[in-house]
Length: 94
Image (cartoon, rainbow, N blue to C red):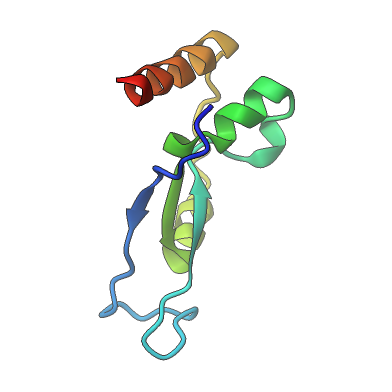
């Protein structure tokens, strides 16, 4: 697995009220597309969850909204996780 940080970044909208904003700085953190964390327990599942393409740097307020909607994504099968990570590895090597 690549240690490079290729995760997507969705910048804050400075015109939207945000309880986390300090001065002109937005508080951003990492959202994992594969959640909840408790569902990803073994080594393969943890590697999949932490894969750079499964992480997005987003505004904390947007992050809160995503989780408040409680729309938990379906957990892929182990085979799907392996295929996903193999595709990313292939693109890194080309």
